Length: 310
Image (cartoon, rainbow, N blue to C red; front, side, top):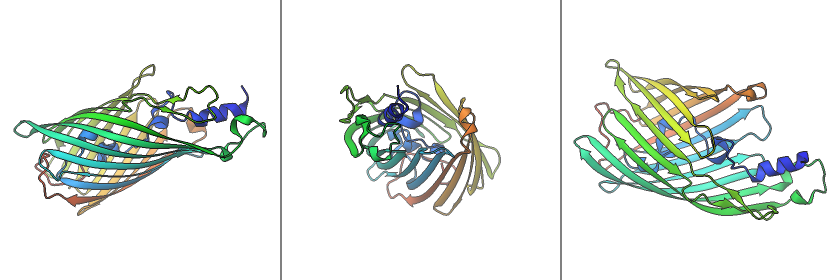
């Protein structure tokens, strides 16, 4: 197959089975905003987090993924949570802009322990700008310029079980496994989105009056692909400063650092690439800014400490 056709197919099948980062917007600091991965988390915090995130992935590679997102969730009615996520994900000539609206219901299992069930409706706009595709054959009819787009509905479901020191959840994004259809898809088969399965959990350990250690894990699975997992550790000092690291199996090592002053949080991460991409990429940068707004409705989350960063 001609090189130009390979480029074109890569662009219109931006969402493939080859990797999670192409199919869903990727965040290395999701442990500070796990609402990104599980709609059942909406409204479970003792505050209303408003968070903006910018990520530049695989620096040094042309047309590498760039992601911007903003999220907000909280509880206004007892035992219920609402939230929204707006995401813009760009890889070369392909762009995906999505809006997610989430609802959750919280059930007290026993004193201090809660179960939350959540669902989210998602609407994604997929855009392919063929003017940005470089062709070996300028007259290739498969990609003669112009722009194509498709509006695709999707959904996500999640379960979240948590207490004062622990949390665990399961989420299933892309429930419908919708198709992204462009007119240049000559076979008319569309590009299939794939259902994902996430399992995540963590535990907070008091290591002294001013120190807290939080190990956590995220396991990701899709059909016909190897199981992926992240192992994370975060250390927080006086609820004001944190450092941490993550190991994403056979993919990257992530360094985390951040701080919080009153109700404002700032975090940064750097991904050290472990795959062959390290020959061409210097790594990935991610930055988030958070505003933790007070909640009038008492959310179910209860902790001895009052820090907002968890």
